[in-house]
Image (cartoon, rainbow, N blue to C red; front, side, top):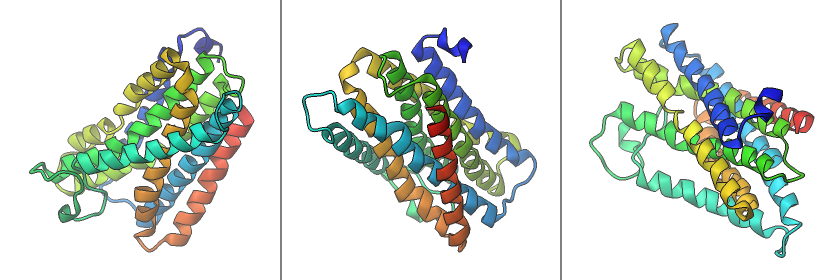
Length: 269
């Protein structure tokens, strides 16, 4: 903790983004051990990831945004509501624009503009797009600490980082193992799996830098990240966790994930 306090917030955000990326890389490294994954385990982990993201969206992002808004000359709910909706619209626009395909879906279900890109590229892009709001959330959290808001502290930003890192593990699995089953080598499958999260440290730096340069956008930026994360959870992660016929396990995973993230945030934040 003392080591981090001596660093600039942008460097803190970069290191946090690299930390969460490492969990994706760890999940992707599972391809060196197996090319198959138990569907019950995967659905439980996806549910867990959804629970973590839902809890992080409120405890680490929306709640501080609402608290910060109480000191502004606007209705206390306005920045959180506006930022939240803009975050969802941003992810919707990205989904419509960039070609990608979700895990387990046939190639004909690819979303975004039509392209001749290979299925492997579309799989990687799907997770890459959804890692952007996670990186932004981390960066904005560290940026909030830097500008000195009472509702933000370094321990809370670290708790958010740990929570997002944990839920990144199954995302690495979801990329590398399908690529391996489709005939790609272990090394290439791992490379593409970990590469899907390289946007997180980049987005973290952008998020931290933005709120430091323009402090007034902080509550909007926090709720923007929350809205983008909730969009990912509702549109992709929860439906995918339920598709394999393990709805109860996925739901319990989500409950546990929510509680783990809540404990992290309340204890350290």
